[in-house]
Length: 593
Image (cartoon, rainbow, N blue to C red; front, side):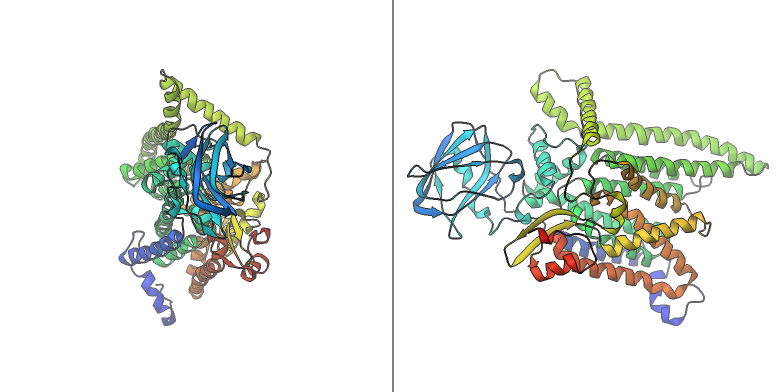
């Protein structure tokens, strides 16, 4: 503590004794507790493990008969589809006919078909193209009907009736872009032609790992993103401890990030944004580890190690989503700024010490340049190339002769296709927003909503206003203080400012339809900038120590209040109206039911 600290601040000494950039015992205890609490919240009601996995596949002309054991009045039919777009025709005992056509958006979830009939036997025919169905459920008066099937191949349609839920929901089926990314992960596993190719493959390969471990079930396709979201908490804690060398500020920063609403929602859905953001945060962390060491006095191997790790994280980020490329450009700016600063220092003075510094500068520069070519060009290139392995495997299965040149052609074709798709996209969306609206959570992204007349379940991807609004203002204030020369020079400044600019700036130029979650990668740097500003202010005036705790408390309260809107937890329409119309937040889409 500072010498002028009064006794009433003494309780805070618990957090300040033994200030260090390393994790002390107290750090480890607090970090473990925070990570555990967040992990429990994130894993709660993530997704079911009770989900049909056996698949009936039929071609045009195939037919089979279902037997209900007695004549029944079926008033509801749920279909859990796999990957196909065919049509099934249903024929009852008295010749009544109806059809159900599989749709892309209804795959891997329980979809209620518009069917109702009275019969004992139901003949099912594949009417058009091919069908793939995980399970089908029939109800009468709200009761699940027992049913058997005559043909062995069609047994997969009704062999997992124990997986039929009480009601279809986010918990037992795909929502939002999971129909693209989780589906593509499944296709990668089974060597199928991929449906979603508009982003690099690594994120979907990570999703596939969860599916391999837990099956093609909601929990299986969501778990890896959630674990990466959990891992962001200790990463942010360690990053903050390096910057502030204070346990209290590290805990507050990690806590604010843990209880950010978008961090919660985006990591609990099987899309790829979480992986891009995780690797962006990781690459900037390692770049900070590099630039904070003195160019001339730090052992060269200690300088080069984090630089290599930053390059690996850059490669993984680019292979997950192209936002990693934007962040990589920012890394280059930070690196060049560090080198130019060292060059300026090397040419100060004309004594023997200055001559030695100049010689050392150029010697280390060429070593660093070669190291960067290896770890920021070659290694990321190899990572990116290898991430397309599922594409190569599929293409190789279609023709006997498929070599390295063909793999290269496949890679290049997909890059062209991705660029043409994103640059030529003209579609609009009800949830789209513009870049200048994002810092203040103007409009969330609607993942899921369902209501039964009494309660409503909703998942909206939005930021925690207590985190975003304050961070947006604080980051601007810190930048202005830096421009005016009121902030002491620190190697973290380029990390913070370039981190914001590299992840936010490119979206200013994008003319296609964009969404609030495109701001996800910028938020950690805004948050770090604002906490840094608060850190500086507290050093000047010890009496404002309580502000950071008040900020964290406000963020936790806001997270609790918004929890039903971001988690899918059913709530009454009265509380939903409070969240939508009274609490300052985003558009949450409760009113769209």
